[in-house]
Image (cartoon, rainbow, N blue to C red; front, side, top):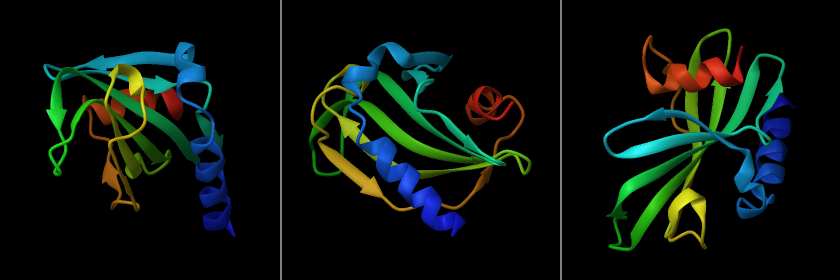
Length: 131
């Protein structure tokens, strides 16, 4: 039943247009390649589990495996707060910055859980969504 609730939540969150909620992106980190944001409006916490949209706005364009250019990547992420673990549930690559434009490619399917190690970007986002 919990898995069904998680699936339903992910589906519902996916139908909220990203561009309408552009003002809800909160910057949490920066690397040489990208600026990273999380969606403060669509972050959900259910018990020990938190779901968040993680947006990486690239500083220069990249290409997907099919050769299509993209400027930003949107990740659906699940955090197990007490265990301090996280995993990506799905990814979409967008042709414009801040997740704008119809995705050029998408990937669904949960990855394995990984620890949100000290000082990592995963820990930085963990601090926003779990505490």
